[in-house]
Length: 293
Ligand code: C2E
Ligand code: MG
Ligand code: MG
Ligand code: MG
Image (cartoon, rainbow, N blue to C red; front, side):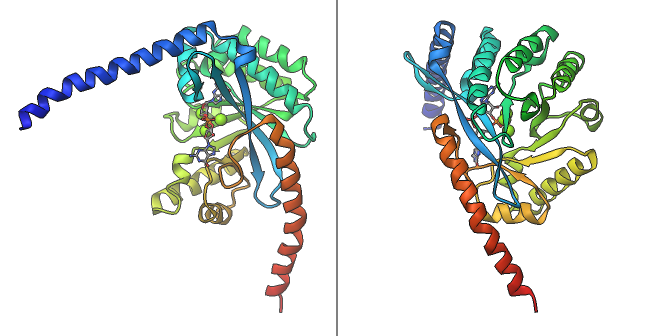
């Protein structure tokens, strides 16, 4: 019986592999022929200040709807676009769209925008990013560019130069998915970072085991020692939030507040958070009074 299973397995595996490859091929083709301006859109997810409940920033997240293959997640199409050579064009289209939205928000709310490795691995590429920023109605100081740890490694010199260019413009640089890469602290130290984003894999371990708690605790204290801002990503439960509060985390992001929303819903989210703030303030005061003698 074992034998029969063993014989069945390879062919089943090959079949699955073929369809996956086919699917990838279809996506690659669809990206090549895509009308980027029409098919790409940007969703926004709030980054919230723990103490006040106010929205400090929105992270822009790419959404792609292709007439050929339908909705494709960014975790799927971004890596394919990186290999097939259209990533920079995609980044530029998304950045322009995100900035035109951010121009309408209250000015104390920042925009956080993801860059891929290839966007920062040659100096002249940053020039195009800079030109899009300068032609927008958004103050560069309101923009944080997110790069991943892996992007910052291997091509340190080019990436470092690009980051320095963006910093010189007045933009911030956030290290995304922090803790999942393999960069050493000395490599990190060499980058002019303004923010680190603690990856959600650590957050989901927060209330399950002591190790998760210790990791988040030390990453938060590392960010304080480095003098950079810190955002805890992927917060889904109030139990996780309570622990982050106890550890002194200042900025948080996750489904507990909101999933990424289309641009039209950003205004509603801002209004909702402003209301919660007005509502929360007296509650916090009341709590304080309760404890007082
Ligand atoms: P990321 O930059 O780390 O973005 C956070 C991802 O986590 C988003 O997935 C977001 O929807 C999801 N998320 C947020 N809060 C929660 C939560 O509480 N629980 C869980 N389980 N997930 C949460 P999304 O939008 O599918 O994006 C996936 C990744 O694709 C991003 O990870 C980023 O690396 C990449 N990406 C997205 N948009 C862009 C873009 O415009 N350019 C580039 N280069 N990469 C992008
Ligand atoms: Mg990100
Ligand atoms: Mg990421
Ligand atoms: Mg992340």
